[in-house]
Amino acid sequence: MGLVDEFLERLRVEEGASPLTVSAYRRDLRRLAAFLVSRRRSLETARPTDLAAHLAALHGAGLGPRSLARTLAAVRGLYRHARAAGRLGRDPAALLETPRLPRRLPRALSRADARALVEGVDGAEPRALRDRALLELLYGSGLRASELVGLTPGDLDLHGQFLVCRGKRDRQRLVPLGAQARRALVAYLERGRPALVGEAEPGAVFVNRRGRPLSRQGLWGIVRAHARRIGLARAFPHALRHSFASHLLEGGADLRSVQALLGHADIGTTEIYTHLPSEAVRRMYRRYHPRA
Image (cartoon, rainbow, N blue to C red):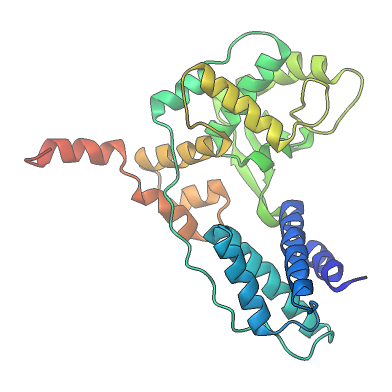
């Protein structure tokens, strides 16, 4: 087994990295290996200057700070593994600097737009029942796209009104199931999903029109199609998750509770929502500032 495959296998098995992370790291490390070949080097013989030149070339080609940071994490992880496994006696990535990431504010929908998007899907046709249920879950429970498409029937407790969600690094959490989402799910599971699935059992709660597990790309397309239909230009699955968090905080929820609901390991990730100007703050500003 090559060095990269060995590292990625350890990452997957021992650290529980998601398939998306493993796939992204594989691409990053293959790109590094190709760059090193152009300099008559290999992963085993790379010098710190080679790795710095690779990152500089990626930056010059327009790769953004987040992608650069992920590439650097893959390179650092690879060489830490190589040294710990006795494959290398030194770590050429030890002194590489992490690029500074811009703190981007999440794009949340207004309450009116979120409601219009979710309630704009109506009807008894199987795909309409599916789409209403998944939109209710995205906004009502704040699920990530990967968490929603990864749901299995065994993850749902409709009587207790909660679901088991598997987030990043396969961490599990319990997520409340609101009354509206529960009603939509029941309708989909009783009248929509059986018609889409037929006699096969795909194992996933949400399926495409052929009865196979819905993909993240398929989910993205569904949300975008319904958003366009009502004139929303910037609505996508993660926007509903952002709206879930923002509207909870606007309503008075505490940050720790929102962190738990979102499945954030670090509360610093959740704190970004406190930078959004809530409607309550806007009302206060308009009421009290003389130039408002």
